Every structure is written in C-alpha cells, then in structure tokens.
Image (cartoon, rainbow over all chains, first blue to last red):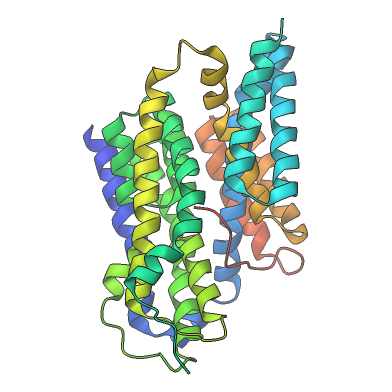
Length: 114
Length: 243
C-alpha cells in the first residue's frame, strides 16, 4: 500500500465521516436550511452526473476497440449485456440482479461467439 | 397497546435487505479494484475507511488513471458532500416523533449513514408506530457496513485472476462495472435528470478525448452538477439509491 493511496483514502474517509457526523451537531433545522437551494441542488446532481460519467468511462474502451480495431463481437456482446441489465432493472427494480444478469449475458455471449 | 421494540437487534435484522443489495455490489467493487491493479488489502482498506460506493468506483478510476492525489481528494470529497444532506433530513423527522430525545452516540451511527441506510431510516419513521432509536440506527448501520466490507474482500479475491481459466466468467466479471453503473443510473435517474446525464456524458467524451479519461470523469461530474443547479427540470433529489 503506497503512501499516496493511503493519504487519499484517509483524507476522503475522514472527510466523508465528517460530512455524515457534523450535521448531527448543528441541529436539524439549521442544517436543512444551510443545504437547501442551489448548493443542495448541486450536491444532489453531482451524484447522478458522476455515475453517468463513470458509465461512459467504463464503456469507452469497448467503443474505441469497436471503432479502431473493428472488434464488433465484443461491442455486440456489450449491447446484449446492457440491454439485459436495462430489462432486468425495469422488471424487478433490483440493482444487484440487473448488474449480475447483464454481466453474465455479456460473458456468455462473448464465449459463444465464433 | 404493546409497542414494537426498536433496538439494536431490530436494526440489525432490518438491515437484511440492504445486506442482500450491498454484498453483490461490493463484490463488483472488489473485482473492479482487483482488475485495476489494487491489492486485496487496498480494496478492503478503502471500503472500510471511505465506505461510499460511487466514490470508491471513482477513486479506482482516478488513481488507476494516474490522477494526482490532490485532484482525487477534491473530486471524491465533492461527490461525497451530498452526505451532508442526510443527517439534517433524518433528524428533522425524528424530532417530530415522541421518541425524539438528546442524541447520545451520533458519532457511532453517523459513519453508517449511506444512501440506503438513510432511506431505510426514513422508511422506519414513516411507519405507523414511527419510533426511532440510536441503537436501532447502529444495528442497521453495522449490518450494511459488514456486508460492504466482506463483499469487497470476496470480490478482490475473485478479481485477482482466480477465474482466468474460465474465459466466460472472467469476461463477465470484467463487464460488471458498465452493468453496475447502468443499474445505479436507472435506480437514480428521473425524467428531470436527463439534462444532467446528457451533459455529464458529453463533457466526459470531450474531456477524455482532449485530456484523459480521469479528467473527463471529473469535468463531466462538475458540469452535470452545475446543470443540476439550473432552475427547472433537474431539481434536487436527496435519496439517490446508490451504495
């Protein structure tokens, strides 16, 4: 475990703990008031935006491989996997099931492809 | 009328749905960390000390992508700052109930106040016998915390190359991140969030092409957050349904 990794984890861990703990000390009403409005809207939207950006980043290597190296098999398997995730989530509203199901279909599709 | 007990054990038992949801997602995190070159000890350390799912995935993307520690710290804290919203929202409701009293151990249960634990506590307060105790909150938090930590350890073991002899399984494990992020996005997103999503993805694509993937993630995150501040469709949302 290198020092840089350790410092990032400890600082973010302590900071996150304080985000959760400090508002219990300042009173419910004061805390809610301070975090309403634009700051609250920004903090709430950052969560959605970060997951959207992470999804795009996780798919980027597959898209680049399909475009530059013409690896269409992996791209087709990815489309199948993501479609499975989408349908499973619409059906059961279960993050774990949709995640595992989509990944399993991707792995199987890639394995079965000639 | 007999009153329902709302103690540590009830909290621990009440955490079961979260345990079942957290464990496989934590396994995905462990696998992703292992495949990004992090050791089992590093993945477990991160899960136990940071204990915030989305930011942990962002952390491995940033650190494995070569982002500097200061940039990583600022972006991860920005993402986790939404947790500031939870305790005020929870305590506002607690103080409306007859079980409201001076808090004794908020330092203990605050660490476990994740998105789902917060949502479960609100659910408890919405019940007919709306009682809430700190020991119930501690039980709920410990169940979820242990599921997240143990799932990470299992995932890091699997992600360390244990399935390389089974290519279908290995490929499926490698695809857990896209399917996880898509599932989380589907769980979080509402119609009014689409401008935030489209902005984040578009700015990521430009940032990644011009600079690097980790810079693209950061730019997309901030741009999406700024769009969320605009008046109109992308109004604030407190419960986001992610680990």
